[in-house]
Length: 263
Image (cartoon, rainbow, N blue to C red; front, side, top):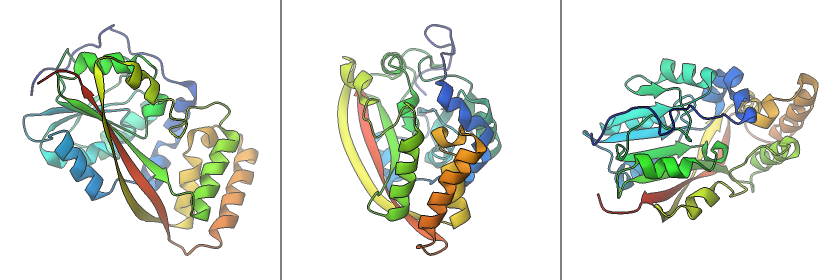
């Protein structure tokens, strides 16, 4: 381990985007219905971040630990950062062997140049611009942050229907697809774009679990029940044309940004 955890640079916990708070009440549904990550992508993360015993890695915006728990077998010391109470409670229950922090990406609870690597899975679009500076502060020179995201294959009717339903009710909520999450990283002199790798795959869910997954999407979980039920009925109609369980196609994108300098 190259450093130790301590108070974030400004001593504050930072602010959580209001829409992200809706994840708390649906944390159990989120953990059950959302996709995991393919073994090829996890092996790639272990290689590019050099995860092994003696290394300290932070999973930022860890949610219920869906990626966090897959990092533990590397032998690295894994720390999870998650500000939403309900999500963090689920992480503690399901992901033993990690240290869990109630903190945000904009005020990481780690010392200067203490991290040997970091990940951010399904969360980067919720972070404020200050998180890029926090990466520069906490990553050692040469260490990297891997941004991980499962992108739906919109050529599959049910995946297209889910994406379109979210977009109809997003009401300005941040999205990965917008690409705006890249702007703070691209503007930060201390970070270097390390390129992206993509891993197409599919995972099975029952029709009921697909509907649960839709319920767990932030803009949809915040809807009133009548509006949400109408939207879910539309997804259910599309599912009638699919086998049960259905293989949902997606691509896991892994984008790397490296701390400038040599380790």
